[in-house]
Image (cartoon, rainbow, N blue to C red; front, side, top):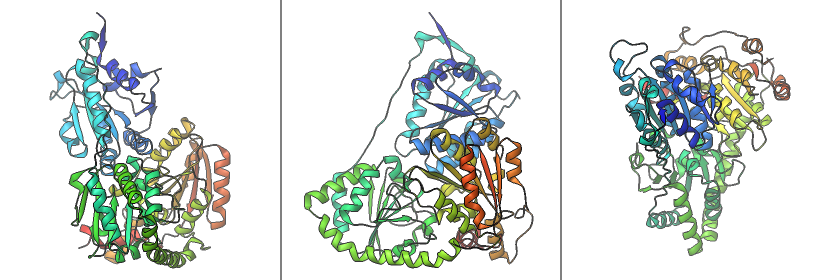
Length: 564
């Protein structure tokens, strides 16, 4: 009878699931898998740091709505991945992290890179698994995949000791499993209740979050908005599920974004949350009118009522819920009356949005030198105007500026770090997006602080021929912390807030990319044109005004435990 090794079983499980790439950095404890993936249909995409590999896998999971796969070696390889795992957990990104570890027989003997990995990562993942028998590897691989994607998506950890990977078993003794889980739970009675609540409202709002994206509701959400005439805001991965350009879409749900958000939340009488959590972004629920009724639709029961009591909790797949609502509206012929009922409310939101944007317009159009960061964000947004353009934002203030500005026309085409607030996602996210969509334009807007974390991923992009364009919002330091300290302490502490002028563009040139520099607003667009025309990995180093304080900095100084 033919024998088979553990490393081969892992490789076969990945190949059988049509995994296109494993994002990884090599190491001795995972070499038994490498040798069976080499020259297979699964690409080994190697990065310069394990954190970057896992961030790329996270971005892949976000963009494809399938598990991104990362693989790291034991000990330091494992610990280097933890920040990205935590980011994936809070972002609900489907991810499988495969990690090597010391052999079972060598545990606690001070072997190379020996540590107890499982207890460290368990709080950060949906489930942490350790396979200790070679013949059971396919079972554990199957469990990891279906857990990552079922229900609310998230990261799963699978630990494989090196002696289990090197071990051999008779092929006939291996039970291979491959189970796909498709679940769309919904109680139709809840749709009736929601439609009734809509009929009694005067100023309802809908906020579609990441759950809407993972449920694939793009068609159903637009249909729901058009049937009811309800105004829709979007957040996180929900951005673009209804395009910002749609007449009933009021863009990002962030209250700090110029638009109708703050006015809407303070005056609404009904909030319908679709796969969206009541978090800091909504001042833990306090931003909504205290008298407003709250409907929360989510795939996870534990999320219901976080931070604020919910009048109707709907445990449901978002697509199933919207389909049921749309059918009920059609059956009862409510569409025309709803649209008439909410037309004055929508008109008031449009007026509020116009007035709010007018207040910000001078900064978007600012000709000042150093460059106003909102002018930089507007230049990027205006240039990246194709429906399939992908924009990634990274950095504290920088993500705030881009979040205040970006027009999202298509879902899955805008990425930032989300509620974990983890800097360093930018280059790995952009590289993953370009790898997935080689024919699309990918632009990263990043802060000068955040770009330093994974700077050598520029080399990865050059080596892999990923023609991303990274625009650095260079305000000479850690702007958000600097400004929040100024607001809170009356001054900024230089250590940890000041970097100074660094020629990042020249560093990228040295790595084989294109480096460009801009000091004036009118130099930004020509630099973007040159960078994208070059077909090279490019860096545009843009000097911006270090004195401008973002709403994000103000929020950091005044919200949550940071406030004394």
